[in-house]
Image (cartoon, rainbow, N blue to C red):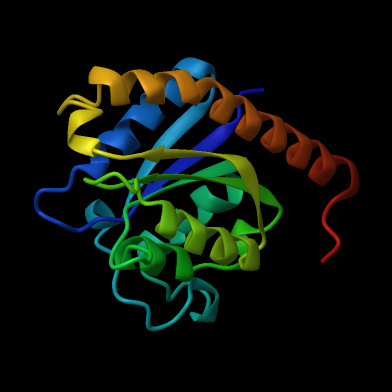
Length: 196
């Protein structure tokens, strides 16, 4: 059974370069054997959080939230692709994530961070770790941190230069770690359900 993996991306900028990393991951995870889908917050055009999906009366939630809730519930794992905004998380990705809660439970999450500079979004990755854990996900230990995003992936999301080579070298471990946890969590959910 192929793992169903959602790659979530949240930049709303006009000249967003992180989309390259999101697309690279969708392609690479698909080649790895996963059933992968990009969830792009900007393309979904979600409203700013007023009410969580679960707080709407039955059949009153916006259709975009209802459809996304179904995708999250049926996923085996998640990859959060995040840039760093003033040492913190991207507001668009945080807004997307906060619309849901129980839908995320009992599945693994991985973090892939990026920036234009050398820090590679590491501070945002650190902030996301606690947030995703609090939201009921198991955050895997393998991460991807891409500095100099514009010099690592070209406009077609293909690795270039030394940064691209480093990303391609790091990806197999990242994917294998996520797949292991996805399979383990799925097996446990099927065998024993969830504790609450």
